[in-house]
Length: 479
Image 1 (cartoon, rainbow, N blue to C red):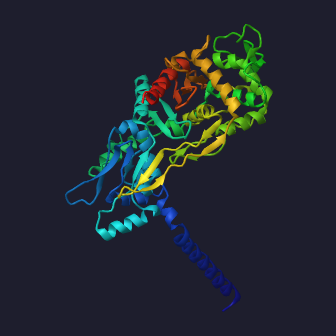
Image 2 (image 1 turned 90 degrees about the vertical axis):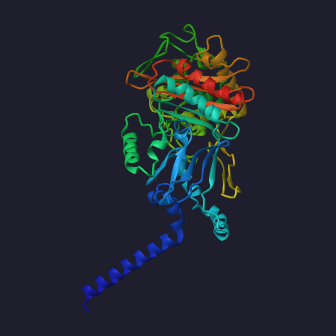
Image 3 (image 1 turned 120 degrees about the vertical axis):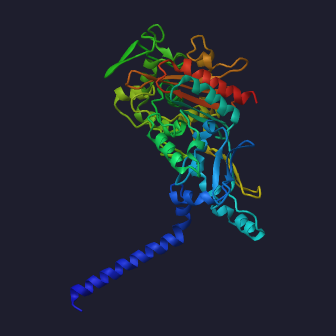
């Protein structure tokens, strides 16, 4: 054998060896993770012949499977109050799934290794194999309040509610929603497929959970982050800052009322939050500097990469900025700042929870087919955003937003208790504005933190978002 042929043979053998090692590695160490990966479409096709576990909100099965019957060995997925829960639950169909149906698929279809013992036991006893049931943290009354508030507006938008002390997601609703029953049929897959394609192609993006996966300029709700940075840096609610009618930040920055914030005099931090003064809060951001603003935003959850709750959550961003013109606008939630509604609920939740932001989660527990709990939520601190003293100062300042003499968000107030809130009216560069409201209640013993956004609402957040947030908070408190 001449040298070139020998080298080619050795090279070919080496490649073959590497290929065999790679296959062995995948089969030995990665098979389980690949099988359970939520983006493995094969698992969804195979699951059509498996008795899938249910998804429950409280004691209500909001997603469950029934045998098709006849000669078919398939199961039909069905959804109760489908449109109400679709932004969270998602949909399960041949070849794909969304929402919790995708994120918790390995439990629902019974393939998760935590179910192995139960599956083996069922096999020995002759029990029908069945996936595990997934119990959500969603409160049906709060979810309904979000739907009732958003749907009549006829606008795209989202609302999310958290338990500040645990991070449990009490509601996550997005408009427009969709009926998952319309895409889940296993007996008329052609029609179901056409409906799915229609939803995917829609400019309204009904398959998108805007609460988790859409980012918006948060507008003046971000002033809570700027105020946090100021207080953590040594300012007090009484500290003042220049609050002119207009600031030259490359282009003029004005206040919503086209006048100064305190009759031409420097305005206090507390009053600037109450009336939502743009010019003073932009000056605060510029004085604090890009690094402190960047660090404070990060402490609330910005710039931390995507998150799983276990549904995927898009990253919110507040980039490090040194240009004063951009930094000033960032300080009022414009320019380069983008946030999901969940992120802004985390800001409100952090203030409500003495400065600690809890990691959001949607799944309370998972039970196998024998009603044994195989997984339970473990609340954990996501970040220590501010000190407890700063959180208390922010709470009092945000109470001023709903009940101060010049309150910008009185529509978010609830009779008989104090509500801490912050309005936001975010410019989009299109001539329209997104309208925000974040809040928590009761202010002295918070049980719920809320964020609401209405796309292109073209009113103030206090007019559009606050009443929706109020309804959601009342749904928690009235229980």
